[in-house]
Length: 404
Image 1 (cartoon, rainbow, N blue to C red):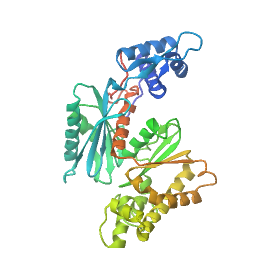
Image 2 (cartoon, one colour):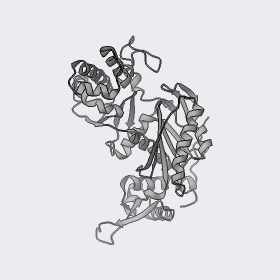
Image 3 (tube, helix red, strand yellow):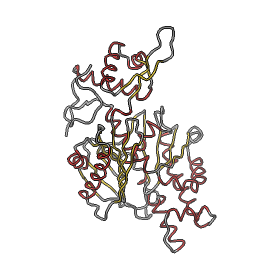
Image 4 (cartoon, one colour):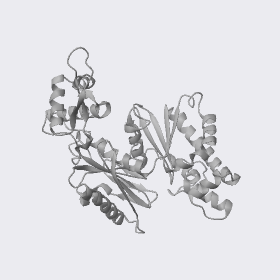
């Protein structure tokens, strides 16, 4: 479907200006109208008109008086996080986690459900719908702007289509349409690692940083990229499939169908497979980690080998992107103490001269609540955008279409 950019009519200009003002208050509030006007390169009269309308609609509020620079003390404006709610959802191969958040992505309530043996799209969509409806029922008096859904795979965000899920083995599923029909709410879907990357950009280590990478460990290996201040998704939504970098051409089979992917060598299933082969019994991840931490040299060697392989792969990323910040997280970060020394040694040894020393490395062991909060950030990001495309279905928005 071709998309035509809306012409620069008066209403579009109003929407862009409102979006700019809302984003400035969100990112820098509490902030005065004068500072907004200077940052947005708008007249004070225009900013006053916009902010007054946003206050009337409950989206902004007058927070407090600022410090005087010689005249009257300026009134500082802030975003009203209670003006509405969004729902963030993480879909995995085994469960659905949903979180209801305010406009600051602060979690108000969270629920989870285990998926049944029926993994067909229709069955999973119904389970997700049921979980979301439970959250809506407990907060029926509050306005819910929409839903952000994060899951592993290649996702065409604009079309709302899941192109491929390596864990669920789905292909070309019109997931957004199916959910919007059932829930009658706007839905944004995105690769789950991108949801975390957006949360890092909004609330975490990436605040104020224009270029950084996020690498996630767990059931799979993923990567998110913020380049020049923007989340990079690639041509068809598949940018960042770091876990499917081929490390050993004739290596173990990966869920994607290839052999020797990074994910097939260092993700949690790969480590458990090596533990089971070495000890001739099955392990849970917690048992494997505990054995290594209690000094078993075989278990420690398996984790160390994974750390070296991961360090080698990440060194390639650092040499390509030269990021000032690298965040490593995900549920697999719980085992990072066992990987960290060999990972850092290998990373430092293979980074181009000076790149490692100039980079800040941050480890964040996110849980499922962080993934869901990141998914909520998807919808929040959508809310602060003007609707630039006339051919695209109208999305959720905080923009006031008939106000100046």
